[in-house]
Image (cartoon, rainbow, N blue to C red):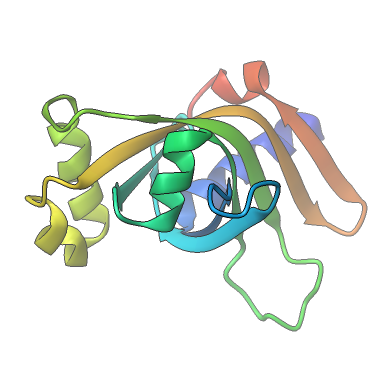
Length: 154
């Protein structure tokens, strides 16, 4: 059952396009700050954001790189037991010179981001998963550990 949960969690992450990114507020210490972001995940479950330095969540991550990223199954919102996944992670900001390939992949996933790819204040952030909480429905709740997550591809 646990192995199936891991597969389903990675599938949910791979299929999702929008997430709620929660960071530690820099301007209101002690409070979380949530915002929606586009992201993409590779087949190993590695997650990448492409965000501007002037965005509040980027400013927050520059002061404290710990975050959570929550994705939901895209279905009828009337079902409170829809699948959802929260990654608890640490973010690493990549230099532009080191991330051109990832920027190209982001634009491939989100063609509208083409307009941002040459703006020097936009950077790729890689999320390094510490732990994940996957809820596949009523009574199907799992904490997934880093070593499990890193093993295998979809």
